[in-house]
Length: 195
Ligand SMILES: [Mn+2]
Image (tube, rainbow, N blue to C red; front, top):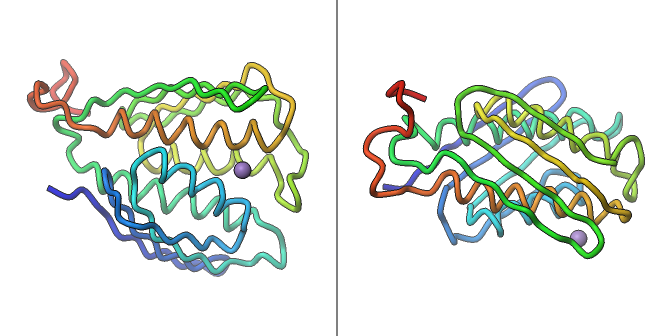
């Protein structure tokens, strides 16, 4: 069964059309309006084996904040819908990804309990004209709307691009593991019987 979702979300700040397919090698098409975010999302889909079709028209004349946050919300909503009842999924995923001098550790639980832990040396710098602090905003919005417990740790690194890219790639790998189906799991992986 193909696990997928389509979201259309329009506000006075952004207009987003998004289609997500889990465990898919179908070609993605990502146009967030922000080239750096496109680059980061392309790593998530490649390493997460996802298909993402995204078109965002946002108020970039202000800055990237609304677009980045709203794409996080929409991607989170799509992930939640695509996961459905979460039966048979491995639920947990973790990955430690080296990117030259930087290390990005991501651990996640598709728990339906939103919680973001974000410990990185990244703060208010810019990569090109991209505000690095928006990376946290993106994952906060995604976590909240997808129902994920997500821990992102970058214990060390120097180059901003490497640290950012490491986070997104590592997230892709951890997500791929967590959404994958384990045929030995009957129902949901919880003693509560629901996640
Ligand atoms: Mn790069």
